Amino acid sequence: MLSFILRRLLIAVPTIILISVFVFALQKLLPGDPVLAMAGEERDPEVLEFLREKYRLNDPIPVQYFTWITNAMRGDLGISLRTNQPVLELIGQKLPVTIQLAVMSMIFALVIGIPAGILSAVKKGTVTDYVANVVALSGLSIPNFWLGIMLILLVSVKWQLLPASGYVPLSEDFGKSITTMLMPAFVLGTALAATLMRHTRSAMLGVLKSDYVRTARAKGLTERRVVLKHAFRNALTPIVTLTALLFGELVAGAVLTEQIFTIPGFGKLVVDAVFNRDYAVVQGIVLITAIGFIFMNLIADVLYVLLNPRLRGQ
Image (cartoon, rainbow, N blue to C red; front, side, top):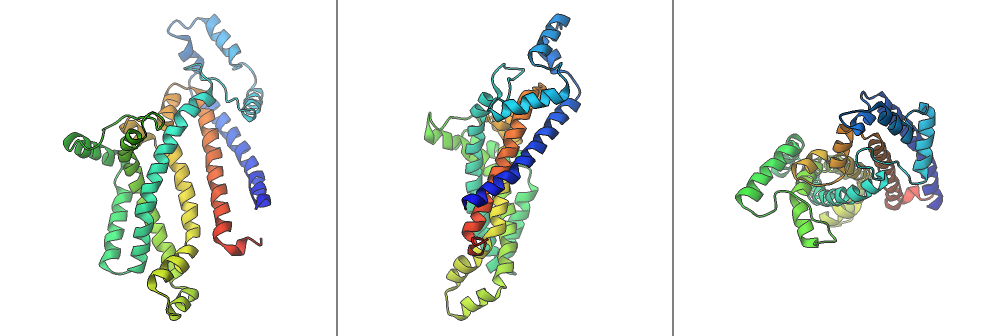
């Protein structure tokens, strides 16, 4: 298993390097000069030159990239041009908030999507199957921002059951932190639940037609045991892949939901960095996000081996 993980990590290294080159080059192609925003309204030429020298923006682009990637490998992602804080420190402040939101959203998605997909596959062609498909289609079609606004109007403004916005750290008040995250997590989780439901249903339909499932039924096993132990376990491979990718997508793409519910997470940091042309922060965020996706894929690969005994000998 250790050698398997090491091989996957070695494969990931060229991917990260290519992503870093692409991100660095893309930043240089964007219009505008971040130094102009930092210099203020007067934009004294001496100040501009000082800032360019300070942040090494006058160096050739290959030298700038080599300096940046070398520092990044040592854990130094640069300094924010806007706040003058280390980029890694900014990410460390915002990322736990988004991870909490992503974990809670994924719990909603798994609890709703997988049972619905199994039930829909087992009850194929019945009213239950049609209802589950209609609900899944609705979850995929309804925009997150619209659902979030409707929940705020109903649950917070009209019924006054949950806070409309804001965030409380887990370390400060665990119960209040969970309460403030329930609505945004439900908004993100329902869309993911619809996707998981469709993929779970498709995977289960393929497995339920297999010979070993028919053999298990012929042996007199209960339908519950046939479905959960024999069919669902063998249908988990595509579901594990999708879950890993969706979790990475949650961490990287919860921008609108965080804006609607005023959550100071990763999404707000990305938006502020892009609008302020804070190149160091944008580069650091994309690099960390890419590493996160690769890490989630590594977890999915390890789970494959654990779930499928035939892969362990390979």
